[in-house]
Length: 375
Image 1: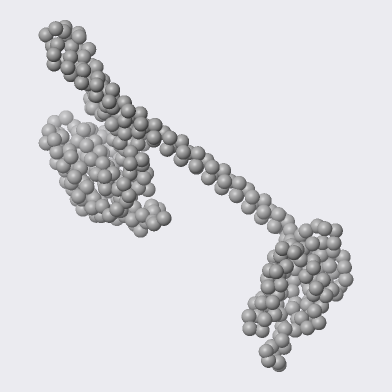
Image 2: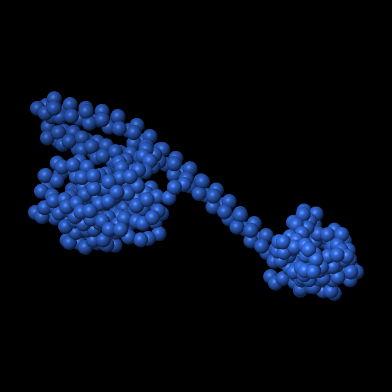
């Protein structure tokens, strides 16, 4: 939409009279060429008069001498309301002290269509923002409900599973001579199924706790958390002959427990998927990078291994909950370790991705803010 035509006016500050050219008179309704300042003010919408008078006073003030600028509504004789933009400059009599305002010369333009378009866009933007907020709130509520359900379900199912495992153990211990090979096989399958279910529930519980049981961010020495993760994995490291090389890892603002979980999952993943007859070798190092993450600077951590690797077309799939590229007969687990890593990175406003070549190992790349913005 284009604005309307431009009219000119001249106001005599001493006499309190305003002279309007034909375009100006047409814009404001046919009327006299010269009107009083009081008549001009009455044309202004009551809600805008104070602002208009204040702008005029500043323009006539010999000290301030601010150019006259105003966008306001005007009440036409027939009751219609239009918007006009006015611009003007005041000349002063400098021969007296203080200088006296003589006249204001200016222009006015009908901007009604522009204002209507602006108001329409504003309403549309406000409506969109409201819808986005409502949808975001709805999604947050549903996500919280799902997390609460996962936490409660996995927690409440732990006890029945423990009983299944306990009675299975009792049967295996007390009735070995009374049972045939088929019955013993059934009991072993039951115990294994219960163990897998317990592992799955514990992983689901850990996944839900990334946000529900999170600790506040604090300064965390990543080298210490990595060493703690290595210590937690000591039995598996010894059992496979794994070598873990920890490079420079600085301090960042993070949840210390979740950083330990992150390293433990990534190192444990590298140990699990090692090549047959080739001891796992895991290298962890970091570097400072720039990016769009919150805070001042970001840290890039790379976890490299010499394992079996995978096809890169699966590089996104492996971070989904319960995703497995291999059967349980090849590698144990429930497919939640990397999903937990991604959940931790989402909470830390970071990212995690993977590069890999089958038979040549994998590299997991974590990028997270060194510091977080204060809310």
